[in-house]
Image (cartoon, rainbow, N blue to C red; front, side, top):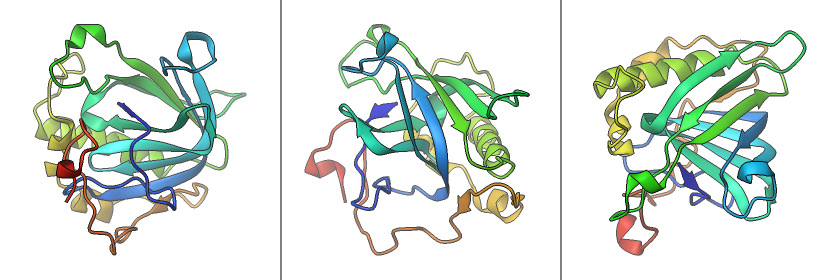
Amino acid sequence: MALNPPLFPNGMPVPFLNEIFVLARDGVEFEVDKIPGASGHGGQVKARGTIFLSNIRMVFVAEKPIGNFYAFDMPLLHIRGEKFKQPVFHCNNISGLVDPIVPENESRALYSPHSFKILFKEGGCGTFVPLFFNLLSSERQYNQLSNQDSEPRVDPLLAAQTPVDEMMRHAYVDPNDPTKIFLQQPTPESHLRRRSYHSATAENYI
């Protein structure tokens, strides 16, 4: 994961090189733990906002900042233990773990995974859920990561090589799910592209 990734003024995440945004889903509640400076137990943050899904990552963008938290970036290749639940008396939700992006020259042993949950508060999730799980499955197969316990020492940007066109052409659109599917990229006028997860210096943009 990466806390507070760069965003455009309209709230869209600044894309990586070869990143393709698949969908955006408003009206979700997002929970995540181990956020530095968070006042909740175990560094937990709970916020309402929008989930963006691309061929590389899932990004939550909060409607309003909570302390120093306004967005959370989850590389698909670092997500594991994901589960979809449909409780009788509560909201449908997806939960799981996401391994952090370890800074260069630091030990992975110093970083533990974050637990996250996405709660669908407004409308169904029949469009979002299949696309999310199909994309996870596709990129794991492409990168030969069929075992969820595989060592996550892999460049998260490798997921960009996963073909998504065929998946999008056959995606089922649930009329009860307010998910917005991007038939064309939402920021075609922008030439700004990120090269790396690690540093925000100028050389990591094109």
